[in-house]
Length: 367
Image 1: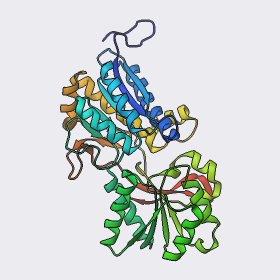
Image 2 (image 1 turned 135 degrees about the vertical axis):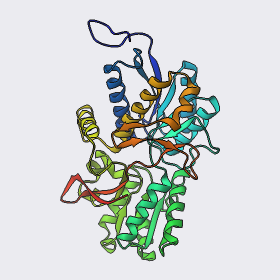
Image 3 (image 1 turned 90 degrees about the vertical axis):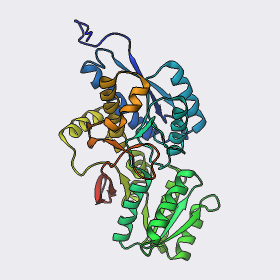
Image 4 (image 1 turned 60 degrees about the vertical axis):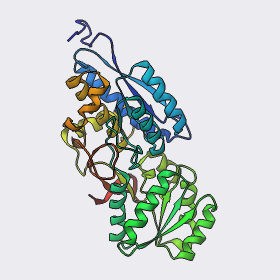
C-alpha cells in the first residue's frame, strides 16, 4: 500500500466509479442528494481505510435528471473514461435504460435504489441491485392495506412503465384476496375530479402513483379538504413522504400517509454510526436512499479489493458477495422473475409521519 507519510492518505492513480444520480428537475432532486451523500461518505471512509490496495476510490458523478436518454449518454461517456463500475440511480425507468446500456457495453452496474422488476429485458451477468424489487415491496404494501381494512382501493396514476407496473402488482395481488383496484388516469383528471371519482367509486383508500411534488401535493391537499373523503386513507407506496420536502410543502396534511421504506426496525452498530455521519453531512435525518448509496460503495469496494478493477471479474463476483451493510448482510442471488443479481431481501417497512409530530416516522407494518 502506498501511503503519504504526512497526510496518511492513499496515493497513486485512482480507481473510478461512475455515479448516476438525479440532481436536477424533473428528477427527484432530494432523493438524488441523499443517494449522493451515501455514495460520497462510503468513498471517503474507504479511502481513509487505505483505499483499494493503496489506490484511492474516486466518484465520477453524472446528473441523470430523470432522463433515460441522458443516462444512456452518461453510461457511454463513463465507459469511455474507463470507470471500473457504475453505481447509483434512483428512478426506475432511468435505471432500466442505464442497465440495458451497461449490459451491452460489458460495464458492471450496481443499482442502488430503482425497484422496477425488469431492469433489463433479458437476464444479465453485468447488473446487480440492492433495492428490493417492486413486486416484493408492493405486495407487502398490499398486505398492509388489507390488514388495515381496505379492499376498495383507487390508484391515481401517471402513465409510465413504473406506475403501470405498480398498478398491475397491486391489482393482481389484491384481486386474489377479494380486493378491488380502481384506476384513475391522471392525464384526464385534475385533483378536484379525483375527489369526485373517489366518492363515486366508494373507495376507502387512494394511492399516489404520481410524481412529486406535482401532482402528488395538489391531490393530497384536495382530498384533505374534501369533507366527503374524511375517512379515506391516502397512501404512497413509492415513498414520496420519505423526504423532508414533503412535510415542508404539506405540513399537517402530509402526515398519516403510509409509504414504503427500506430500513430495519433497529439499525446495527454500523448502521447507527453511518446514520450519525449522514445526518451531519445532510443536515437532516437521512432517508433509506442515503443508506442505499452507502451500501453500494461498501459492496463495490469489497469486490474491487478482492478481485481488482477488471470489469469482467467484478461482474463474475456478484454471486460471491457477502458484505455487512448498514441494513444487514448483503448477498446476491438469482430470483425468479428478476433479470439481474438481486439482494433478496433488504428489510421492508410501511411507515407514516406521525400527525402529532410530522418529523417523526411511525412503523405501521414490517416484512
